[in-house]
Length: 139
Image (cartoon, rainbow, N blue to C red; front, top):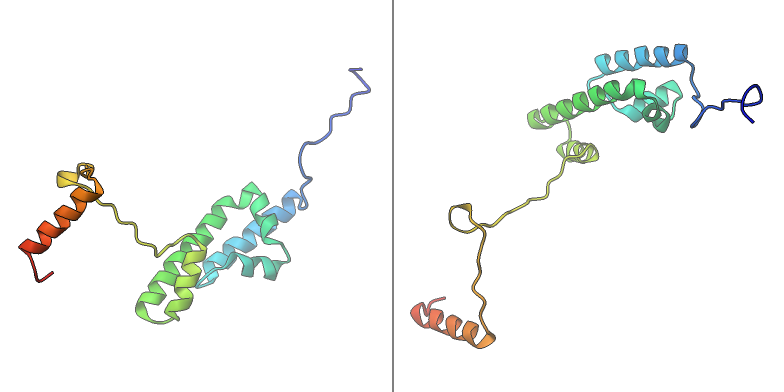
């Protein structure tokens, strides 16, 4: 069944915006990033009648999205440090773009070697604790 009866069908979801519309949005997004102190992707999308998911769908916007997030991150950090914006809100916004305030602590042995804990029976552990208490009764 090959030949003139075969119809090549496009693969994937059809694009909602044509090339001219995409180029127009790229221009608007670039202008928005350059002229906004703290650019927010959802704000841009809302003002331009485009869904955020649609913006992420088009690879043409990937560099601009990264630039927007980086400018937002830098602005939030600087403004939080100089006290010109609410620190709690800045922290919340930074967590939305990947920041974290959890502490990771790694414990190693001497000179960074892995820890090699002694294996003790319960009786040996109790005896070691008693001996330590006898040496240092104030603890």
